[in-house]
Figure 1 (tube, rainbow, N blue to C red):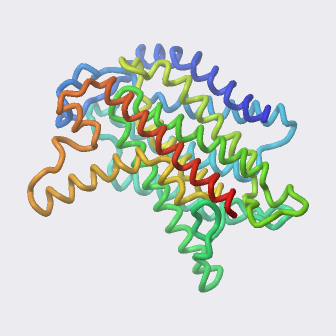
Figure 2 (spheres, helix red, strand yellow):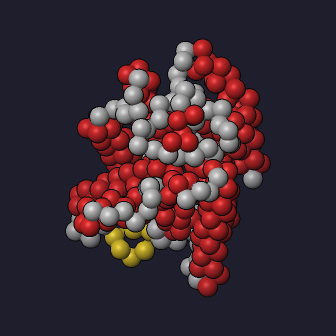
Length: 360
């Protein structure tokens, strides 16, 4: 538990103290945000605000995890390294996208093809590696079984290991793409994605701690309710470090934002969420814990689908938070109410998670 607290505390301090230094660095080089021309007109005043703040979130997370491992006197597990690899790798793709926007003075960064190649390389390599590195109990970081609150009986390796690997790569990359795009779409108002993310990763701290206490590998006479997760403690440590980094960053990202996380941060956080859901065997449960992100993605899908089919729009603007902006809600009001929704879904997810253990 102390290692979890250290990870959160160190990352919080690094983000809290490091963000203003990074802001000054960006301002000196005129690395500011470019605002989409078809967005709400109120956002034009945000043009020029420093972006790429995700660099701080990633850096603070890495330092938080490193400090925790030094305290524990051991190297990070395979699960921790994989989660950090996915977060950092997607963050790098986002960084290149953000830097391209700044360098070319436009609101569009990397081409769609370049993004797909970058995300695909990181996602595929993560998925392949996640099925390697069995520990002394022959448990790998990930499993070919689809998971809800734990692994289900739906095994992607129903036709052999090769088919299982291929289908798992497809499944994992679907989750990675979905979650990274979900957080990216949510990052449209000051503090919205950051605050919502810290709530979700806070829930995953609890998931990791509970799985550690009820691990099949630690309990001599483990019952049917134990968890077959390879490294639950390190899952909690990584989630705590990300949560702490988000708290520290939110201090400067809250309205009016002094800095934006950019695609660097949103892709990194989405990737981390996907990674933790896969490594903790809670892939479907993540859709409940991160329910706000799901709603925002659905609003965008509904808007696009409705317009293509009927040439009519369901919302004044998508994603959903922009609809409420154009409906007259203040930005801070939207953010706080969406945080409340994020908290509700996180609590609901944790309730389902605990209830299943009680009745198992």
